[in-house]
Image (cartoon, rainbow, N blue to C red; front, side, top):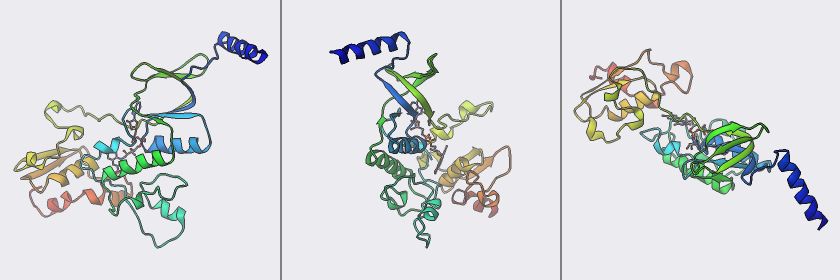
Length: 265
Ligand SMILES: Cc1cc2nc3c(=O)[nH]c(=O)nc-3n(C[C@H](O)[C@H](O)[C@H](O)COP(=O)(O)OP(=O)(O)OC[C@H]3O[C@@H](n4cnc5c(N)ncnc54)[C@H](O)[C@@H]3O)c2cc1C
């Protein structure tokens, strides 16, 4: 009875001081279950922290269900290295996340050096499930704010409120970069691009932008077009010249062959 009285008194005191936490309180809230959010969740889970990951899709890694549009990853799946040193091998495996579970390596999921994107989606969801990561799917969070008591508050799409001591944004870069080009409304953006080759058959196609997305697209369609013309504000930056993985990768640059051979591209 005394215990009950003390608990009620404590709750009253906390309420008066404004420090009471809502039932939806977590110490750590991670928003987004892409590779970044999952990796964060793994470390929070292992450290036995009170955490939750909110993900707006119904699965982890949903970015890769759509992108790259032509569904071939450019992150390499290096399965053999002639070395037994795990750190060395891991350094050359561009897709796997860090975990203690040896079965959770992308190298065990596919033999392809440039894997299909849906294999990565499968891998990321296995990572989440096998490691029992606490993820609340179908939860789109909005209006993250910091309250006077220094706790963060946010809501999902059903206006359920959540409070957290720490918020980790792992929402990626989801918005297309729309350039200010007059007439842009007449252009297909990469994010809406059709992968139906018959739409490009016998066509003259202008690709604006000479990064990996532009080159990936040109390479996908150049077998059926009359010619592909590429334009951008700067010269091609080729990864083999710059050593930067974000520049145009050799696996995407086949159009340079047909350009140099005067094959109409
Ligand atoms: C066209 C393109 C091709 C790429 N190809 C490759 C490749 O081949 N290999 C490679 O390694 N990298 C590739 N990348 C880079 C890769 O996308 C990112 O490095 C990686 O996905 C980033 O992981 P992330 O977890 O930070 O974000 P994301 O993978 O984008 O994950 C963010 C997550 O947050 C969720 N989310 C967003 N907003 C909310 C919200 N309000 N509430 C709840 N959840 C939310 C999203 O649904 C998503 O699941 C490519 C990028 C682009 C643009």
